[in-house]
Image (cartoon, rainbow, N blue to C red):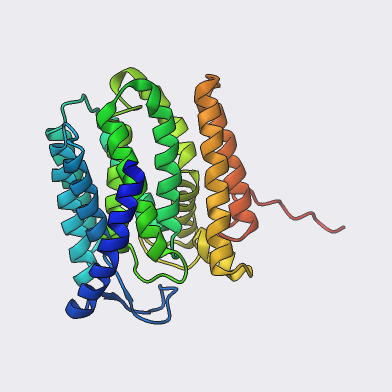
Length: 321
């Protein structure tokens, strides 16, 4: 029921928000980095933020303060970036402050590794947000996987917030799927990454179960592999690792002839397969590092095949006698 009510709330809030963006001129304009050919309302994280915390208050979720403080800060950072554009360095500082706010007020024990995990998830979610509905759908799949994983832990607050996150994200996806009527923008992509990673931190990544990091990485293998390939690609080209290009996973799928919706649905399919693999790994206590390495190698091989990166191993040319 929580998912349904959250979904309905988003179907009301998003159209209202789209009208407001027209008044304030908050649009994502076409450029050499964008897929859209016309201006589209952006910063869709604002209605997600509002709906998420209204629902959390309605359901009287406990220990809400750390989520609220961190989410508020990262939403403000994303909004500034969507409106005026921040440098990569300033954006990273903002992300770090948001995570530290969450950690400082968090009643659970959080390690340095968890902080790095949260910052990483925020960034990979932001990087993969290149097609209508892509990042939103991946977070829905990841959050549903985390919910299944968390149900046996007896963490009511985390479970409630995951239901709310899934419902609000599904409601937003109605307007974000191709052809999108509104974009996540950095406001929404970073907020979704923050909320998902924070909920994982307070559930399966508690001190007693920190060994589950590899399984969580498997769940997000599409954005993680895409980001890793982007770093490799830019190192191969000798340019800064944060320099934007159009060789990401979704760009290459489009360049290879898949349509917009086909590319997104293909990414969903890969994410669902990865999520199922992660759940099986956890359930049957299979070596998580072995599976993660195997999955990563498969993705790197595929990335080289579709031109995201140059092959890491170059065959030596045979001498012609």
